[in-house]
Every structure is written in structure tokens, then in C-alpha cells.
Image 1 (cartoon, rainbow, N blue to C red):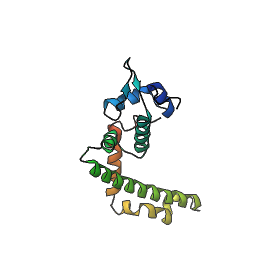
Image 2 (cartoon, rainbow, N blue to C red):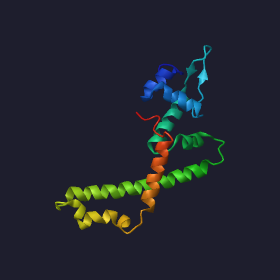
Image 3 (cartoon, rainbow, N blue to C red):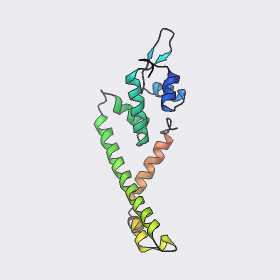
Image 4 (cartoon, helix red, strand yellow):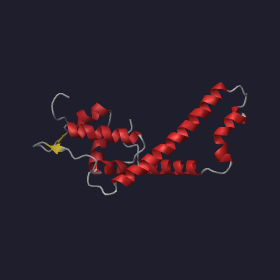
Length: 155
């Protein structure tokens, strides 16, 4: 950083964001930049850290509301929100691990039609047995986040 404070354009450029994203984050209470005498937003080191935290947590699947709670030192529901997020991460990581195992099996499998391979099908045995609860819950959560504009800061 050239100086201790930077403009909205410089901050946006540093993270590959559009300036309207930073303004939106300000509108929803995620950022509170200082203003200079002319009323222009000025961002210091603390705001850079906040933007990095927002982006990292968005990438991990948190909604802007969850991130707002995370960054609010006074939020009484912070632990509940974080515990729910950890549970969601654990569920998604388990699904990704299962998907990875199926993909690795498909790469090694000699079956012409991998979907008919008994080893490959083990990856979907729970769904075939009627236990789609965790998968359906995950899909519903993804759908809910998409409806809330979770990807506002995505590049």
C-alpha cells in the first residue's frame, strides 16, 4: 500500500471487486469507512482486513448476514451462527470427499459404464437406500444462499 489510507477504487482494484460491491457491503453494515473532508471514502488497514475476511468467508459459503454477525463483536448470536457454519462446512466437506472418492474410482475403473460398476455405486448407496436427508439439506441451503445474493463479491 502506498499510503495508510486508500480510495474505494484502489481497494476494489486490490481485491478484483467492483466499487459497487464495496458500497453494498457498506449499506449492509459490513464496512464503515472513514470519510475525508470532501466526503470520499477512505479505507485503512482495518478495512482491508475486513474485506479479506468477507471474501474468504464468502468463498467458504457464508452469507453476507452470517459474515456481518461474525464481524460484529456485540452480536449475541455469533456463536450460534458460527456453530451452524461449522456444521455446514463439515457436511459439505463430507460430500466433497465422497464425490472425490467416486471421481477417483471412475478414473481407475475398467467398467465401460461406470454408473453400473458396483464399486462406483457404493458412493450413492445412501441415496439409493432412501437417505437423502443430508444431500437435500445441503441443496436447500445452497439454493437459499443463491436466493440471498451470496455471490455479490465473487469475481
